[in-house]
Length: 202
Image (cartoon, rainbow, N blue to C red; front, side, top):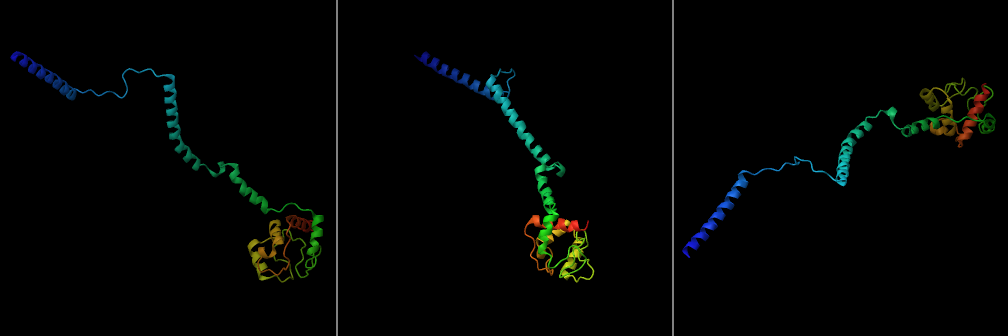
């Protein structure tokens, strides 16, 4: 029995020694696994597609900031035509439409009480012979208001555009002027009167 006890103790010590040596070997001789295996492992078709989609998304995300900066540096001339339209529309709105002299003659009946259009003679207001293209406040013998003289220094000439603005809203275009007429409310009436006045100078 005594020999059996010695044998058991020896076996336990031997096992303890074996496990202890293995534990020390793992500590001192540990080997790190590489991130990628040395031998490529074949991928399935589904795994390949998933990897390709992930790479495509990364490339797209990397390109987006650069494209955004390029669009910000885009010159004004290369901007879409839609952004340039408001300026073109504003310019078109400023120029009066072509009018009808015959219709303008009828509309001018509202102005006859104060203006001659066919002879150089003043009434309550100055004559309008050659008004289109004539300097503002330039008719001899007529006493213009200070407001009209100031406007003359500002705009210089009765262009069609200036006449259109004045005929539509005299007090708004030349605040403080003496003309009592409230203005022509219809744009077509304004265009027709200007066409009539212009026709008399030909």
